[in-house]
Image (cartoon, rainbow, N blue to C red; front, top):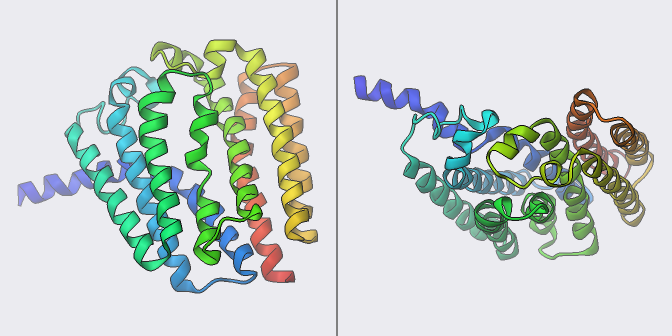
Length: 294
């Protein structure tokens, strides 16, 4: 009975390894992409298996990230309370869980969705866990930019789940998240610059300074705005999408300009949290536009 209760108490730690707070990105970007690809609400079963497979894949990749980053997580204040730095779980459990969830995810997507969705998912897991976490993160200032390719695939996977092919629309969906990622994570890096510096992680603000980092955030915000508008025009979305996309892009650029002109932690926090709201509103606008108008 005591062993049962002890293992029961460890469940939250195993769940924490999957970073459930990040998996929301999957839901926010995948479902609207599926709606646009189908031009209607897709079958519930298709959405269920796509989201389940994607969630398992994200959880697996995140668990492997915990294992590979276990040394620097002990150094950084932001990550020092994770299960491995606190020695709540054996280190190899994170690796085993990561591999297990990833394998299940790929098998599930292959047999319930299609081979292309499974292959893109396999690429995402490998790119995030091996290319980004194990290599790029510690070696290049462009770690977030290049590594962002892995986190940008959920809407493409959603599109492929419906269409079973990669198209211009799916590439633009990929690019929206790809260009959103640096603006979001560099804002966080500005706030945690000392943390990254102590762990010897070459995040942009640590290497080039706050001014250059803020300039690049602004440039990525401008590129993101252009791509999101171009996407709406190509897909022929209507006033609901543009009614959301135009003002939130205006605000994103406004906050990025303010950060560039006069840096402060308050401005960085504002941009960081608004970028989350931005992604939710933009993709929700896509899905709602198709469901209510088309």
